[in-house]
Amino acid sequence: MKTKAQTSVFHRDLVNTPKMVSHADGVHVWDADGNQYLDASSGGNVVISIGYGVEKVIDAMTEQARKVSFCGAFTSEPQEALAQQLAEFAPNGLDKVRFVSGGSEANETAIKLARHYHVESGNSEKYKIVGRWRSYHGNTLGALSATGHVLRRKNYLPMLLPFPHAAPPYQYRCQFCSERSSCTLQCADDVERLILNEGPESVAAFIAEPIVGAAAMGMVADPKYFSRVREICDKYDVLLIVDEVLSGMGRTGANFAIEHWNTRPDIITCGKGISSGYTPLGAVITTNEIHDAVRIGSGAFEHGFTYGGNPLSCAVGSAVLTYIQDNKLVENAATVGSYLQERVAQEIGGLDIVGEVSGKGMLCGIEIVADRETKEPFSPEIAIATRIARRTQELGVLINPSFSGNVDGYRGDRFGICPPLTFTREQVDETVDALGRAVREVREQVRF
Ligand code: PLP
Image (cartoon, rainbow, N blue to C red):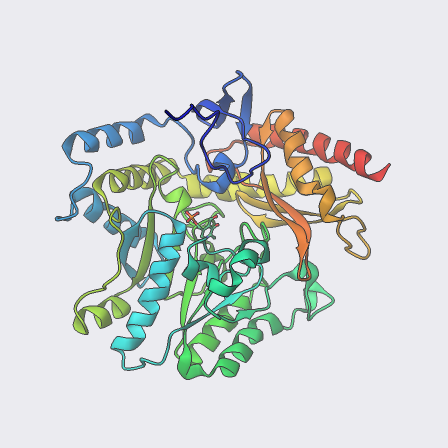
């Protein structure tokens, strides 16, 4: 007879077991010890877009579960309805939607769709995907191959496809320009350099997060970056995939973050906020041209996942998007989000351990440094971003710890403040007060 294990969950952090969640409501979460937290992290993973416990979503979910929660043999009304809603929500020209269950699946799908499109267009040598350093596209092997998050890639390098990675548009630590104001777009030109290096006939797509998440929270490119990238992609018949898993569905104050650059992508990937965490859901949105090339060609896109397009998740996605639109949450993310960015900058931007505050809307990133002049980071053992996030949590507010470490020259500590799109100015104030106190206290501990 097996003895009962103390706990059997194989957690990500094998040393510190996370706290137990009890319940949540609106923008608040309670742990099993009865502590209440204001959630400025959208569930820790930037997922909760509309808040917890929204009755309309719960009603849509239960109603759909009663009707039919899964039937892979047929399409369903919620799937068709959500596809229509997403096509209207997406930029012009992006009208066809394929559903999956999350961000990694969405990016795997986008990568294979790009390849398949080229095969049907008579360019069967095109298969490589150009990614960027300091990016995160998911943990499945294809998405991880395109990813430029060195810590997440490190142990799996021999298993990854040798996709090339361009320089990130990391203005704070730019490897090309000394001044932000005189950006020469060499990071965008690096994409062209890589395409030429690989041979344009072999490159299928370039993938990028319009505003970066896990690998450099809140990293925003120069205003001309994506139009230059679009020109390069057009020149070499390379598709532009934008990964909006974290930055999409209104989070940055635009339906999709790429709209801040006024650039049309060929494929958009979604996840996280699309279902606000009520069920697993992701989507790939593409053009009629790409869809038709595959339909007219082999007539089938031989790639899919069992749970892709399941009626339950699609009913949730549809209710979430309706809620976002009815409550003007994209507009709220723009206005309250600007307030968030300003307040964080005012409160901690002047401290000697804060390198930069950047981002848009409800996606705010902070970089902590040991020396503001040299931008020298703290030693990774100090894990300063994690310490700040822990202390903020003790003070009753959840934020997003992000990239921390020093691997292969990728150094630095960043964390994010990514609240639900429903956040109010008062909740921003409460968040910023706790953050300011936590940063100051941690600064005292590491400085003296
Ligand atoms: N793409 C981006 C930009 C992400 O932030 C993430 C997750 O953090 C993913 C893809 C992977 O999504 P998932 O964890 O749902 O597979």
